[in-house]
Length: 165
Image (tube, rainbow, N blue to C red; front, side, top):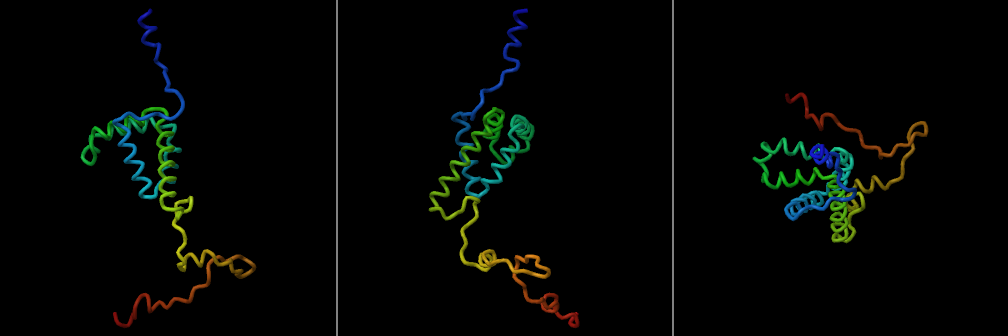
């Protein structure tokens, strides 16, 4: 009976709440991944995906183990396994989200605040920026038309002269 009790003592063990801390092997992998996401300006979609997948982070780690033989053609298998093991921890998503936010704020402050919080570049005076800043024009029956009227399009100019075919 004591043996059974010892086996079941940690059967339902759950990691403590809060962010997980990566090991020395996992830290450079996570850092490189987060820096690449920020460099590509994909922080907001990445955070959205992370938050949506938070309840299934363990399954994500298991899926990475499943796809490891195919992924080993493209990436280092040891790093793939280390990242999969990190994702299996309860607070891994929180750590990744926090690290992405830190790197994004460093990126924005290093750029001198040239980017807005949404990650879109500041206006440069182009026609698109002017169209966005123009007030709405009232169209037929008082319906607001936000786009300025465009000149009529000549189909022969686009398609070419049909008589030459």
